[in-house]
Amino acid sequence: MRNFTTKGVLGLALLVLAVTFTSTATQTVPLPGAITINTNLKYLNNMLGLIFPITVQEVLQQKQFNLTFEDKGFAYKIDIQDVFVNSVNVATSFIGYIPGTNTVRILVSGFDISTRVDGSITALWFIPLKTAGLNVTNMTLQVDLNAPTTDNVNWQVKDAIIVDVTDFQFELQSSFFQGIVNMLHGSILKAVKGELPKVKDLIQAKIDLFNNQMSIHNSTAFLVSLFDSRFPLNLTFTEAPQTDNADNILELHLDGTFYDSIDKTSHVKQNQVFPKRIDGLNSHQIFVHQTMLQSLFFALDQDFFPYKVSNTGITSQLTNMFYEIQNYYGADMISDLEVSILADDGDFLVLNKNTGIEIGKHNNASLHLMVYCQNKTTQRELAVQFAMNFNAVLNISEENYYVYVNIPQIQVSNVEVLNDRVGMNSRDYNMLLSIFIMTAQQMINDMFRTPYDFRSLDPKLMFFITSVFSKPRISPFYLDNFLYLGLTYQFDFMPMTHSEKKFVQDTLLAQHGDKIAKVCNLAIDTIQKAMLA
Image 1 (cartoon, rainbow, N blue to C red):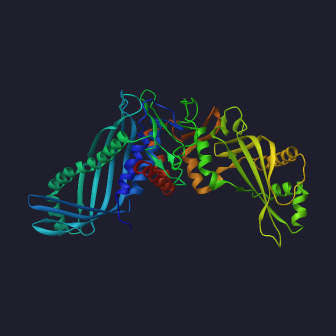
Image 2: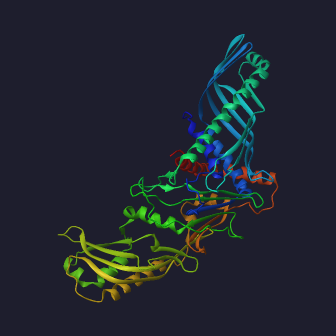
């Protein structure tokens, strides 16, 4: 049993808030970011019906809260120190536009909580509440949010918050004390309702903090460290949220590049294109501009490169091509190959909807091949290093959980021998390295001739995911300069009544609640990093 901290409640509030609105910079002109999220609130509401209950249960259920609640009234005093939550049930959760407005309403009702408490009630007698039951019935939380803006860039969250509870009852083991507490039920319920504004104030304080941060922040207000503290992901908004209640659309534009906190730049050009929602595809659409991938390359450069090639066939192909290497190290030679890609600027990577991912199209990328060798008398050392200009086209996409990989083109030119320990002879290295690259290209294409089934990573988890989400897509072939990510909730387009949908959701929660909880915890932690950084 772990003690409760404010992380759970605040994390849950941040999760709901961040799904709805986040921040912009002190710029005066709206700009497209490297990430555009275009979501349909009608279908997001379907997903919320599955995710929200399990998130609430994960945050509250089987947790201990240090409450320290005190209240005095005529002839009674209540003192509650600790609350242990046994179970939580949510009857209704909703997110959507209020009809005829661009205000987003988040509503949770039928929120029932069963707990054990540690405390006391003084009313003629001292009544201990050690392990007494406490049931909260039909708690309701409603938050209305909109984002007024005068310049379509800088904005504030305007809110209206309602918190209420229908009933609040103690269950004591002693029937005598239970009768006394029952007589005080009306006064206790009134006292509890009198404390509900504190819950409202808690939510309001977070919104006020958020608004204050927006009023003073700059273009790097929300930075999240994912793998390297030097290159956090910039989640600052570049445009105020775009709302369309007629089509239930909410559109968000984030900077989305990896920011070099030392050089104070993302090393890439600003995206200038606002992507448009693609009709007939997924309910929820995310567009990742090539500048995000370009900045990711610079962020991963030192950690990912040089990359050690694990395919021994490719390494043998290269060492067999140049006899000088074999002659120098002898028959007991052991060799391996490392590869690095160097780029002059972010433009080395371009997303083309007709061809795929283009690398080095404008002769602004170079490929380095480092051959390392060792034998019984010599420790592993750099034997030969080749450098060359190269351009390649990669076709990488995912469709309905199958990953497709193909390299239709790789070309190299201007080959140089940068390091030579073995005495390489003069020859047409452009031709020889082209042959080697074409061989490696064919070997890689043969490896992925059959698409990779993403579901094989974790069959149990993926069985749940495929049961909930249909036809996910990741592809560069829908829009120039953008990688498209699409997601559809399984029940978005199914004609189902509310009770039928509730039955299916309850079944999924019962069977896969632990898996949903893992995803929700990851989302809450990531969002808190972004908003509390």
